[in-house]
Each structure stands twice: as structure tokens, then as C-alpha cells.
Image (cartoon, rainbow, N blue to C red):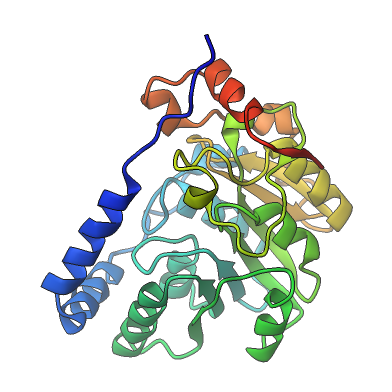
Length: 293
């Protein structure tokens, strides 16, 4: 029997967020977020293990990405402390620790006007003046022009991509910056073997494409191949099967080893927790019009 992709009630979640915005004034939201941003930093690194997943820790990231990113920069050092992130939340993203505890500068972009405004207002309240959030629905045509308009240097330390859809295609077309470290979301449901991505569309939206959210993004194998073409090597993934990490080829070959997609791959912990096995996830993915890349 063919398993169908389960549908979560994301409309209810959206409605709940809208109610919270109505109940909590913007000033109160900014105040509460500024307090959240005032967290103490992670404990010092106390292990010399160079397998990056061993250093997972969460401060502002969704999972253990903060600790992995910190470990990578512990080994390679910083260049100019510039970052670019697209697809972020003001409460939770991969750049926040770098901004708040490593004094990074740069640009964040997202399709949510509310999140961008909240981020910018909280930066102002917290005295952060060299980071800006831009509200934009990104595509191949506008991505580089927005980055250039905001005076981002051609070499940056960190790039984070999490747009729930066109991740592969936006990284592929991005040439105006050459990050030293790249963090990009992958679709673990496809497994470690197939080089698949959802097809490019200027207006791709994950839950419009399918209400399950299963039809989106690219496999770890597809991103590994793209990274090699762009001059990057895969160095690991977080344990929840969410993000993959790449280092530019000229960096830390002896300190942080390259790993294959098969070895780096972790299954999607959330979907497993919902009772959907890896085999069932792949079966669901095969029912969607993914393309070979």
C-alpha cells in the first residue's frame, strides 16, 4: 500500500501567530526579543574532536547548528566577519550567535515583512547598527542585486541558506559572494543516494507546492555535487537531518576532514518522530516531481 504524505495544520499555526501579534504590541515583542538576545554565550569548546557534529549546541539556532558553526570558525578563524543569510527568523536563525557574540556584520533576507521589521527594531534597541534585514521574496533574478545594493564584500565568512524550496538553485546562481563557510538545509527524506531537487520556480512556496511540506529543497547528494562544482567540500551535517555544512576548498583540509554525502547524512529526526520511517519518506518523495540534478 502506498503511503501518503501526512498533512499538518499549518493554517492553524499561521492563525496562532497572527493572534499573538494582535495580543502582543510591537513594542512588547521587541522588548521580549531583546531580552532573549541577551543570553549568555555557549560554554567554551573543551574537545579537540574534529568531527563537527560532536560539537552541536544550541543558543539561537533551530537545532545544534550554533555549536557546529562555532567549532568550524574555531579551526579556521575569521576573515572579515561578514555574513549573508536568507530564510531566517528573528527569534531563531544560524546567524544570531555570530552577530551577538562574535560581532558579525551583514545582511539577512526573508519573505516575512513582520520578521524583518522585528529583527531591525530589535537591532536598533540593542545597539546593533551594521546588520540589516531585508524583506524580499528571493529568486534568481533579484538575489545578487539585493546583496550588491547592500555593500556586502565579495568574500564573506558565512552564508546560510534556508528557503524551504529553491535552496539548490539559489546557491547555484550565487556568484557575487564567496563565503568561507556555507550552511544549507537539505531534504533528508530523499535519502543519501539520489541527487534530486524540487524544480526551480520564481514563486515556489513549500506548503503551496504540497500541504505536507515534503516537496521542497534538495538532497544531500545533490548539494554535495553542487558544492564540488562551486569549490566547496562537505564537512558534515547536524544530527537532526536538517542542515549540511560546507567549507571552501582552500580552508582547513588538515583540521576538518571532508566527508561523503553517505557518511554525513542523517535522517530527518522530526519525521521519524512522527512515525514515518526512512523507507516511507523516500516512497513519499518518489511520488512528487523531483528532478535529477
